[in-house]
Length: 93
Image 1 (tube, helix red, strand yellow):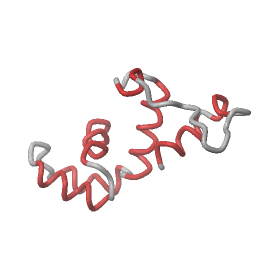
Image 2: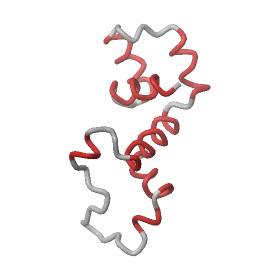
Image 3: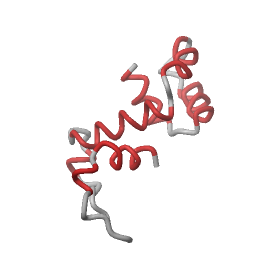
């Protein structure tokens, strides 16, 4: 939801006049899935920062072994995010 909120806030010009019930406007396609689409990257950054602010995540990140899958899963659960989202956020800090 945070990712989609980012599209609404940051990419309103792309959605203006074209949002309909049961319609998808910003589609998940090969380009978006490759992690190179600028709008998707912006939405991912927005969502990661919203859900895991640096001042909250920082204390966990300082002592986190990114190679420890169990530790990553524990921190991800604390923030109610996926491990992939946590890893993405850690790379951006």
